[in-house]
Amino acid sequence: MNVSKGMLIGTVLVGAVYFVIGEIFYNAFQDILPMPLLIGLYFLGLAVFVAIGCAVIVALMYHYNQGYRDIVLRSLLLFLAVFAAAALFEFLYELQLNGRNREPGSYIFLMDSSGSMEANDPENRRYEAIQSVLANQEEDFPFAVYTFANDSTLVRDMGPVSQGTEFQMEEPYGGTAIRTVLEDLYDDIDSGVIDPGKNGKVILFSDGYATDMGLFGFGKIGLGRVLKKFSKANLSISTVGLGDPDDDLMERIAGKTGGVYISVDDASQLNDAMKEAVRQESSRNLLDYRSDVKFDFLYTILRFVAVLVIGVLLAGLKTYISESVLDTQPVLISSIIGSLLAAFCVEFGMNKLGLFPWLMRLLMCVLLAAATLLESWKSRRDYSDQYRDEY
Image 1: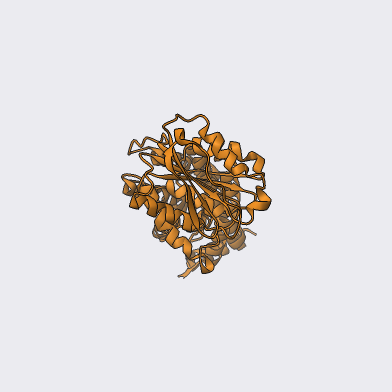
Image 2: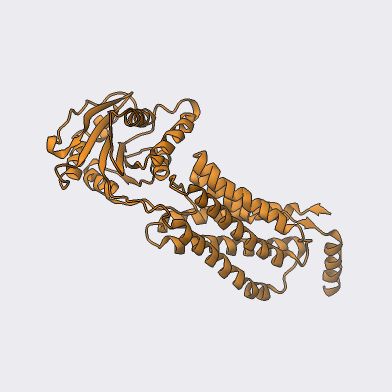
């Protein structure tokens, strides 16, 4: 017996193709559909692609072209099971086990003052946006302001609005030290220079790519450790991007700390963007970053179990469609291994190592769709003889 290379390569391609379609669907509807419905439909789509892909591969490789109506009808139950399981696990995954109060107790603004701001925000509307956010706050509400270029500067100490909302605005110059300002802020909090109080909220604004991430972006590893500290300290970071920022980095900063990412094209939109960043609540779902919370290990287990159950249901589809011409006995073991690897990607690859979410979703789709089956040459010869007799 040999591994069916055609089935393996074909199903890997099925997973890769579905990733593209699923990614478009996920990004287009994540702010429109309820998340359990969205995740249920996402995995339902993957199941349909796996079923169709396996059927087409079997037909092309082994000339098996009968009984597809029966296959489709019987597969409906597995499709519904995949949808229900994904939606249910997503619902459970979104439950708050720590009862966290998300009402901000303070604001800390981190404002990009790099050289590019001279062209992108010549009227300093980013600072006007801070004033608009503070306009409706009580006089005892505390806030602080940092600016960053090649390094970071605390330009307004933490203090109540009643002390005034004016501060020194630095002239644009230099690079975009995003990692530096976050490290400096946490050091100031840790040393007592800044006291964010309970449920402080950080708003980071930038218009470009970080210039302090080191060669090949290895500085993002150190950044991940800093973001974990913010999350454990119950400090969320919401990010606002202007023009052409590093969307992946901004989404990672927000997603890992329980914040949101808002992107705008023009400085005239900054007032609304800043207000939205401080007002919006973050959400948690099976396909994206998760901020560290109390009982975090339970969410790790839940995501593993969710992907594993969905993988086993997909294994049922692969087995049922392929059993006419292939020895499918190893499908369950290979699918469990693939499901565990897929869960490892979305949990540890994305959430612990900070790798790109889209890349981890690509690997997840490929691993869940892949069928590493053993080809039974006796079964294939018997079917080929029957096929020749009929024609």
